[in-house]
Length: 315
Image (tube, rainbow, N blue to C red; front, side, top):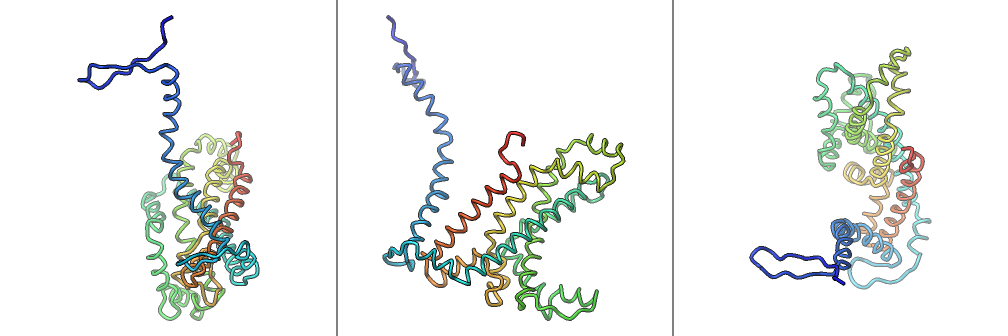
């Protein structure tokens, strides 16, 4: 019986050829797709899974960054639950997340809808202007807003005094106003970026739906509520989750604008981790806070994804 075989030819110039069994050829063919996707898994292990496992291992130790580490078990986690500074950082981060999700996302949707209006002059210029904050370095943005929020010579106080005649506000020196200042920077920085996503989503909404709404007598608000919002639900889900993850890890704004102060009134969880690791040289404690932040963000992201129906067949 003739043996089933496949002939593999060598490069030109080599007249020799050899044969491989058909079973080995099929086995090699099955491995080719895994070979193509292997870079993703290598990078995933190197830059996400590996650091996460190492952070958890480090969180069970006491380590100053140099020298041997000491096994302490779960004591770093029990310290976190008793640490009032960590409680304050969590509360501040929740404020930043709430402001980002509940203020920035709806504001970006409204602006995108306005920019998508037919006949709007200078629409491309507005789009570039709204996206500009995202291409600037957070460090540059924070430094500029440090000048704008200055109590004595800042632009914002000058405008408020000129318009409504109020006394200068100590934006970065009063605890509550410092939180408001950071939220203002968050809104300025993220709104334009999210507008781009909503604008892309609005391009895919069929014009027939708006024309049908016009026939039914719906006004601008009615069309926004009955057509725009439902059709942009997948985009809104993506934007909300993206903003949530970004706000939960906020670091640059409180670090540069207020150094977490006054006191610890604006310190975020990410800034708390930085301070524990690089100022107090308590890397195990910082790793415990970082691993806890990862778990919370991961779980809440899954909850948001379930809430918006991401991954379900009807979406």
